[in-house]
Image (spheres, helix red, strand yellow):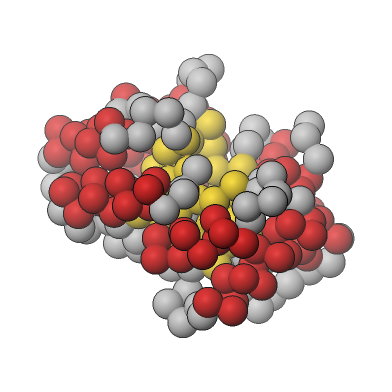
Length: 223
C-alpha cells in the first residue's frame, strides 16, 4: 500500500470557490503531499502556477457535474484544461444517454475525450447513485472499452457518494483488467478511506483529505 496521502485527490469543486480558496487548497496539498488537487477547469492555470515547485498534480473536472453537455463541449473543455496545465481529467459520463440505452453515443463521448489526451490520465465519473446494478455494470464496461484509465463513483453533487456495493460492482466489471477505481463522495475519515483502499480503490477524491491523513473526522463537506 502506498502512503495514505498519495491516494488523495484534494478536491474543491463548489460553485462559490474563490481564487483564494484554490490557493489555500494548493498550499494544503503541498503541505500534506497529496497526489493532486482537483478543481473546476477555470482554475487549472491558477492551480498549476501555485503547484509549480511541487510534485502535486492538477486534475480538472470536465462536463461537470451533469455530464449532459455536447461531446464537442467536453472535448474543447478538455483541450483547454490540458493547455492550462492539467495532468489528469475527470469527465462525467452522459447519464441520460446511458438510461436511453444509447450505449454507442456514451462510448463515443468518452472516446472523443480520450482521443485528445492519449498520454494523460482519464477518469470517467459514473455517478453511481443514479444507476441500478445493471446500469452501473454497463457504464463501467463502456468507460473501460472507451479507454478510461479510472472509473470513478461520484461527482459529490448527487444524492449519494461512494458506496462499498458500487465499488464492488465496478471492480467486477474491470475483471482483472488494468482500469483503476477512484472512490469519491462522502469519504471523510481514515477508517472509511482505508475501507475503500482495501477493496482495491487506487484513488480517493475528497475535500476532507487533511482529516483523513491526520486521523481526524470531518462532517462539513459531502465530497
